[in-house]
Image (cartoon, rainbow, N blue to C red; front, top):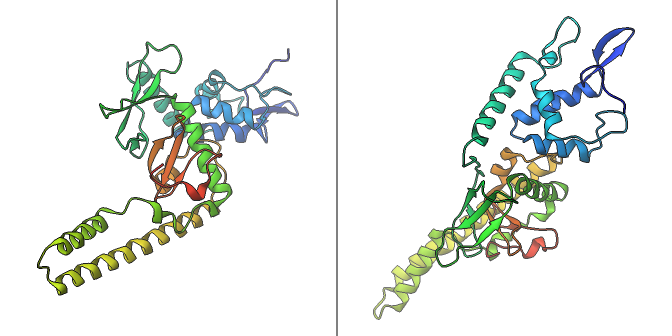
Length: 293
C-alpha cells in the first residue's frame, strides 16, 4: 500500500517541498468548514462523497484523518514546509477542537438548533443525550405528557437531513410558494380581531359602526400579513438563487430561511419556512406542505 512521505497538502517539485495546487486548497477548506461549525464526520463525509483523493485512487476520509490535519502544526510553516494556514486560523481551530472534546466528556453534549423544534402534536421537543444507549445516543422527546413521542436521530444524521432539504430549495427556489401562508395558522392578531368580530356579532344589541370598524381592521391586518409574507417569499427566493449548494449544514442560511422545525411521522425533519410553508422529505409535494404538517 502506498503511503504518504510528506503531509497532505504538499508536493515535491525540483527537490523542494511546495504547496500542492489542489490539496493545499482542501486543507484550507477543512479549516474553514470546521470553524464554520461542521463536525469532523460531516467534513469527512463531504470529501468522500466528492471523491477527493487522500492518496491516488483512495477517497476514504474519516474523522481521525480530518483531526490529524487540523492538529498538524507544519501547516503554519517551517524551514521545510511553506505556510498553508495562518496562526490565527490554526489557533481558533484548536480552541474549537478543545471545546468540543470537553463537551464530549460530559454526560450531556450541548447541541442547539437555531429555531424551536416541535412534535406533530404541536408541543415542544427537547433533545437528550443518553450514553447508555447502544445505537443513537441522541434522541428528541415530546414535552406533552399525553404524547411523550420519541424520535431517535443522531446529530450528524439530523444536520445531514436538514442540509438535503436546504439544497432542495437552493436547487429549485420556485418550490417556495407565494401563497403558502394561506393554509397556515392565522397570526395571533388576525385571530384576535376575528374573535372580536364574532363576539360583537353574537351580542344581542351590537353597535353596527363598531362592528364595521373591527371588520375593516381585520381586513387591513389580513392584507398587511399577506403583503409581508409575499415579501418574505420573494426575499428568500432571491437569496437562494445566489446560494451555492451546501456541502455541510449552514447555521446562517438555516436561521435566515427557517422559523421552526417539526418531525414528521417517520421521524424525518420538516422545515417550516419564514413564509409559513413546510418543506419535508422528497416524496412530499411542496405545494401541499403547510404548517399543519
